[in-house]
Amino acid sequence: MDTIDNSVCDLFVFVCGIIRFKCVGMAYFLCEDNKMDDKNLVEKQVSSKVIYDGFVLHVREDVIELPNGEPASRELIKHIGAVCVIPVTKEGNVIMERQYRYPVSRVITEIPAGKLDSANEDRFEAVKRELREETGLTADNWRDLGEYLPAPAYSDERISMYLATGLHKGEQDLDEDEFLEVFEVPLKDLYEDVMSGKICDGKTQIAILKAYEILKDTI
Image 1 (cartoon, helix red, strand yellow):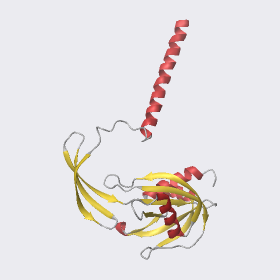
Image 2 (cartoon, one colour; image 1 turned 90 degrees about the vertical axis):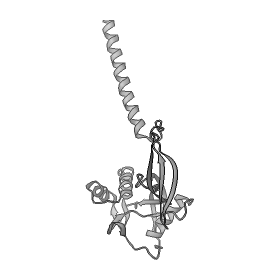
Image 3 (cartoon, rainbow, N blue to C red; image 1 turned 180 degrees about the vertical axis):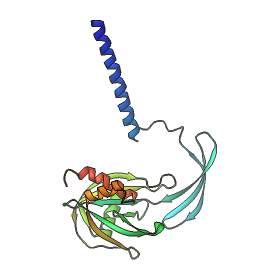
């Protein structure tokens, strides 16, 4: 009987070890901070040529070395960077915008956002400025929602995302070439719009889902 009991215990320990290994492995892959050895994936720049140098976008063609040592080319867009914010009122409504986006020839529903004034601009100061300029709002409480890479296959643009609460109304200060409408929508409705595919803007989708997860028990 002792032998059977010990075998059962050994089997239990073995199974638990497998489960623990799988759980740890899953967490490992889900968290980019716990990176595996990337040397078999990294591409190395050999040379770089500027194709177009614009006001917002800067296009380069790079010759790179693949992980297997073979040469290849990459066309990429350099971007100064941007910020966005999902402002939520005490009633649980989100301050949203409607703005015509020329490249896709349509009006897009999105959260307040904007590019940095310079590459070294403080991103928190930039997002406070964008919120005030586009909506007239200031906020008492801010939460960093992480960064969003909208097109890492061909652009280095990085968007820092924030949640703002404790809002105070003020006056808009739009740029001369900026035309947009500001309106309120319940956060729960926006969550449903994202899940049903009604909102197509990527940064807005992610910010809504994150904000809803954070605030769903309080609205």
